[in-house]
Length: 285
Length: 161
Ligand SMILES: Cc1cc2nc3c(=O)[nH]c(=O)nc-3n(C[C@H](O)[C@H](O)[C@H](O)COP(=O)(O)OP(=O)(O)OC[C@H]3O[C@@H](n4cnc5c(N)ncnc54)[C@H](O)[C@@H]3O)c2cc1C
Ligand code: FES
Ligand code: FES
Image (cartoon, rainbow over all chains, first blue to last red; front, side):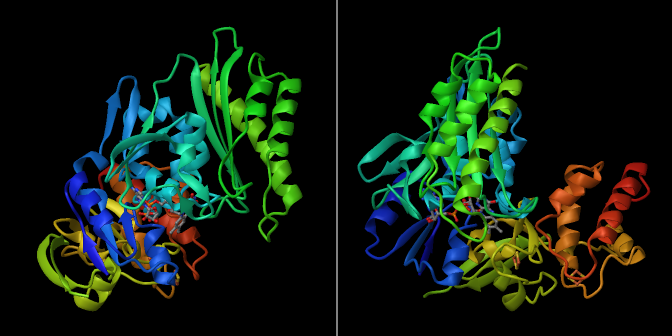
């Protein structure tokens, strides 16, 4: 195996594209090193992207945030304004492992690793995040939801990697939230995860909503029926019941020791209700 | 594989080492530099026994490649005590916050990193911060109390850290 730590995007792309064997970008390494140790992946080349300056910064772009691919979850939480604008993204990133793990783990790694239970992915999909992919054919921006395509599989072409993730400008009266269920209070893998984002007008009517579920299907699921069920309402009980029912209908989870199909499905509805109420209250502030 | 030549600062000392591209920082510290205070419990990020800081950031050394250390400042448990034990180390002794001791370096490095960020943490904050450090022996309570008391002493200015 070779290890390279280029300082430019061009050099990183050339290295990744030029490798005939298995090449892997390295961000925080909290998935990659575990997989190498267990023998699940045996790369011929690792390209550490952390020496590329643009992967290390959070910059304002228009009213939004461009988050470099190597920015860790802990760094997101330390930003002066991002936690107020995108509390759901930050709470999802903080749920990734321990303090030590969140000190390295990145949104980009969580997304590209393509685990169905990845915590930040439903939060990014609910946020309407876009992903800047760089590669031999130049730069393209895609929706976060387009990156994971199956369990452990992403849509990147050989030579491509994620340079940054963009969170759009917030309309007034907007906020987000992420909730997950795990059998204990810390350090576990989501049995169900729910990311939501909501915008309300001054009298409290929901004008826009996004709902995304994790760990209930091979990839993240956006639930437009749940969004429609609450848009135009003030989150009355009837609207919340419809939201929960739509989330349950969108689930096709696995059955395992951590949760049965019936349990995961019911919890998806319950968590969706709680998450949307949290985001709705935050949006009022 | 060809070995890489890496220069880093370790506990303030400029240090050079050779390492294989797939070797972890934990293996470099323990097997090449004889800094065996940093422990290996799992090798997969779950136990925190290998906690160190890289450029001030608390991480698991088992999830960092040795090669990534190039030009970085690494702090390990060996850098904690000066001429005297660090206040956290004293409090751990006072409270008997250790039994077999294998988790202790990780807890100390992690707790120091918390107190540098926040010298007035709630018990809940301490418990969450240290949730990635596992201890098979103590039941955690004495560890939490030792950290809370060290923080209190720091706030009173009883000693420099
Ligand atoms: C103890 C422990 C607890 C954990 N707990 C959780 C948890 O609660 N929730 C959760 O969701 N995850 C958890 N994880 C998994 C992991 O921490 C996350 O998935 C993390 O976000 C991965 O980010 P990373 O930067 O470390 O990725 P890496 O390990 O660097 O990379 C992961 C994968 O993505 C690829 N990749 C990395 N960066 C890029 C890029 N810029 N462009 C293209 N491909 C790239 C890599 O080649 C690799 O295949 C845990 C891991 C550990 C060790
Ligand atoms: S040895 Fe690194 S976390 Fe257990
Ligand atoms: S004292 Fe034995 S593991 Fe903590």
